Length: 276
Length: 193
Image 1 (cartoon, chains in turn orange, green):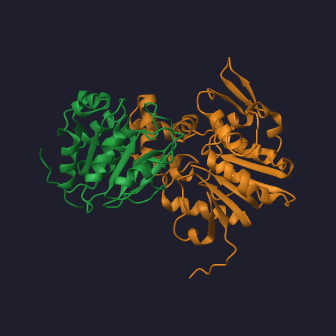
Image 2 (cartoon, rainbow over the protein chains, first blue to last red):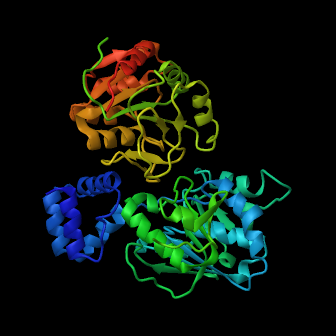
Image 3 (cartoon, chains in turn orange, purple):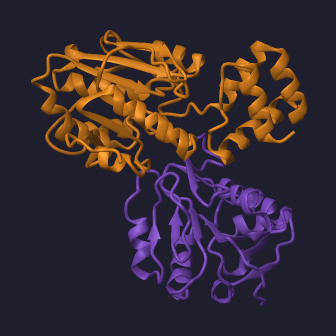
């Protein structure tokens, strides 16, 4: 059995379709599952057909859940200083955080809105394929963060530049003994965490969005799947809506004309483009 | 020193401590018409993200770029793995980025860059491991070797820190062990795609 054949088995016998993920990283993730369970690809295929709980375990293992608070501080500083203030006149601000994983960047964004006095206008729909990641996201408690530069990132956004000064403890309870930080309740009231597989067409909400955040998620998909998903983002956004991707993710082909780049973010273009 | 007579699809160079100077030297002496795609996977400090690509470009004879996800490899262009991302070389000559777990305390991980190239291009992969203070890269070099790719290890006596070349040498016997000036000669003797 080849990896591709295994992905086909998985697609046939579960609700999950990884067949359009980037080859090299998905194959490596499958290898990891094989190593962890000490089984061959054939055995993996057989168990995938027979055991639904095992499939869930496999899906948790092959999806990537690494994320961090304020990853790429310069992007968040741009949003805080240059981009978000223009939303002051909005009555509400709808945000889809697609592929939110354990939620650190959801809370990063909510902190920005709170600093701008806009938190009450915000409604966040945060989605992810991983149930485990969503449970952690809902709790908002993160272990082993203190050595991972999250406070450095925080200071880089709020304290190392301009005259602003924001204390980390304004938003997080820090338990140094347990090496754990927890998000304060104020950040949790405007966010719904919903399980959703981006590969699927149906969306778990009907709202139009002012923002779609999807950072370092599309990198795991091949170009064809990326294009379909970006089309869905485009359709979900209001005219003038904003798409925020990872620092090294770009838009290809047709979408370059449908969005205007503004610093590190993409604005839905006002120009109507004919499709020939 | 021999120049392999083979049509490679990619040359991947990995290094960490002290490798900036070596890579810089190699790039500065490269034939401006270097006919193959080059991938550079260098350990770098997470928060010192700016400067490396500019620094390398100052002396390099070929352009050095930090790719966006799914950018295609191009002959005569060096792609530098971006800070805080792993880089994988894919079958269609594009590169995929990933924020997966750090590997050997590193993101980008040199093992990942090497093994993905070996997996995609097998014997048409050349891997070069330079000076460094970590064992990252050794396993990836071995996977290039196992797939009959071509492997060059920087001569330990010419390294600032020789842990990385030494751990590669422990795992397999490379095609050549060379000083940086000879690595340049090999690269400048290579044929195009």
